[in-house]
Length: 221
Ligand SMILES: O=C[C@H](O)[C@H](O)[C@H](O)COP(=O)(O)O
Image (cartoon, helix red, strand yellow):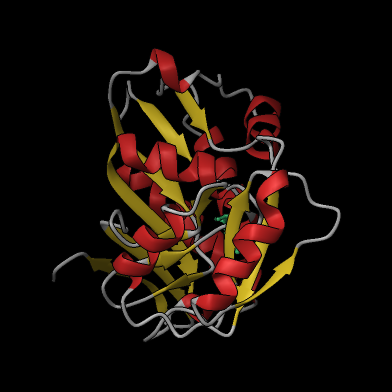
């Protein structure tokens, strides 16, 4: 099976976590694009979606799924999103598509985070994928210097402006043995909007696309 077929399989598998009559949290990326296609098949059974990016909003609307402002939602039972890396503790690196901040906000509201990913995203230790950090433009050089002090090699993601009007630094050379601590440390730097480490709030369920089918992993099991 191609990687795209694996992504499609997990996108479809995530449908079973969507409860009729609810608002669904929707992430961003090529895996989520398949989930949105699947969600469109039950668009008359849900109230709508909360979206984590302008890209996903456009795709949801094109599929006829109403997009609802997060501020008008009291409860979100599930948030479905992809990942750039996921470890056995269900902690993730996200933000390869620059949508990390809105993704983290929706993940914080949701009762359940359902991560959908092909098996290539599974790692023992996070950090092979460069860690995205969303930064307010005037803080770019300062934050980069601080990231170097932490042992990283930050690289400015050229020609990318986030949906929030900020820039992304991708941090190479990190072997993240304590993701929760690094998440706290980077988030504490003035000028950092958020780091793409989802450690304090990881996934609750991971649907992993493999050659043998979709595997379901649950946090703490
Ligand atoms: O900013 C983008 C998101 O964090 C994505 O969920 C992540 O990059 C995975 O994307 P994809 O499913 O395209 O590999």
